Amino acid sequence: MTYRVAVEDGFAGVVRIAHLLNAPRYRVTALNVRRIGASNTWIVDYDICGTDHEQQTLSKRVDRLPGVSKIELLPTRR
Image: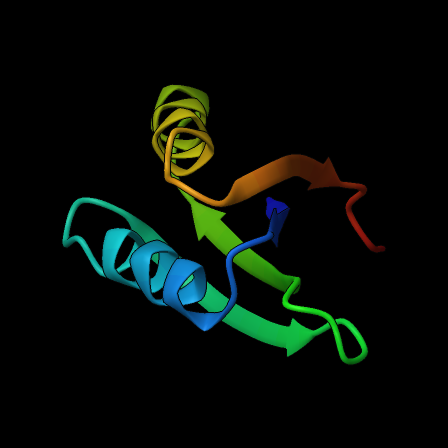
C-alpha cells in the first residue's frame, strides 16, 4: 500500500517521518520525497508491506507527528 503524507514544517518533518519509517518492525519498500514549489511544504510517499493492522498502526503514528497536515492512502496501480 502507498501512503502520501503532506508535511508543513519543512525538511525537519521529513526527517521525523523517515526516522519513524526506519523502525525494523515496519517493512517500508519505497520512499519518495519532494518539495512543493518554493513553499515549506513537502510530500512524502511511502510503500509498506504488512498486515492491515501494521499499516494502520504506522499511519496513526505518522499522523501524530508534528507538522503532518494530511495523510492519505493512494489507489493501487495495476
